[in-house]
Length: 278
Ligand SMILES: C[S@@+](CC[C@H](N)C(=O)[O-])C[C@H]1O[C@@H](n2cnc3c(N)ncnc32)[C@H](O)[C@@H]1O
Image (cartoon, rainbow, N blue to C red; front, side, top):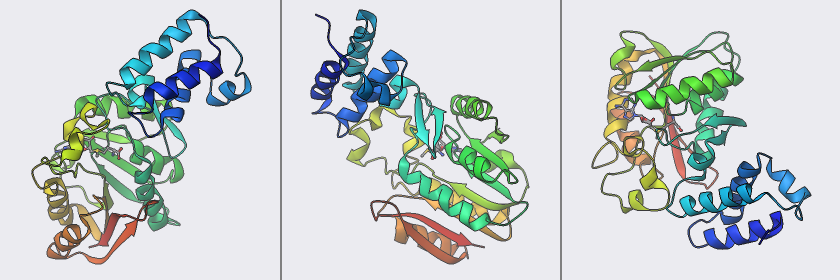
């Protein structure tokens, strides 16, 4: 039996309801993808009957969403800082809370004509690309240990016509002895033993993008301890971290002799980002 857009959305939302806290939104994104239209088309033409192929496409994506696969992997992209970014299972799905990191760095560099920024662990390139788009004069280098993630980041830079230097590197290793005005990172910070890693969409995302060891602080510690050798005088470090890692990150920064240490809260009022100056 043929079904209208409205009926298909109701069916998909009901199917996804138990698995996703954004069942209606997920359904709209999946159906819009199958129709090759945007979401407002669905609201404008609720009585339209999609083709059998389009209906089957939706059923298949709903089946995969229930596995669960993140919506971003099913449709192949995700919005970050108003940019549509190619997103694949090789990359973390960019999170809305990470936009705070971009806002914060843009404020720190406002009015500066030239600034060298190093992003560690770039994934889709979300942070580096958003910074370059809004601060075109900045020189941005971005590393990742994953060659597959870097291929996605490069494709995103090409898609948005933004020039970033991408380097395959284990944190700072391949950046040689270069010095930067800012080091920024959203590193893997979930403890390997945290049951959260086996919940929701997380099992589908690359483990090395989520966790770097037993405590969850391993990557943060390494990035902080080695930062002093890669920052220019008065350079900044800006780090995203878990909502419960504020005091650990602050202590690591103090031990590494950083000053002006400040933690900012995300849109859920959780301490999410800490910045400091050398
Ligand atoms: C939490 S994800 C952040 C991705 C992206 N910056 C974002 O905010 O959406 C962490 C990233 O760090 C990378 N990574 C993990 N270990 C690394 C290492 N030793 N050196 C460099 N990058 C690493 C992962 O591949 C992943 O892309």
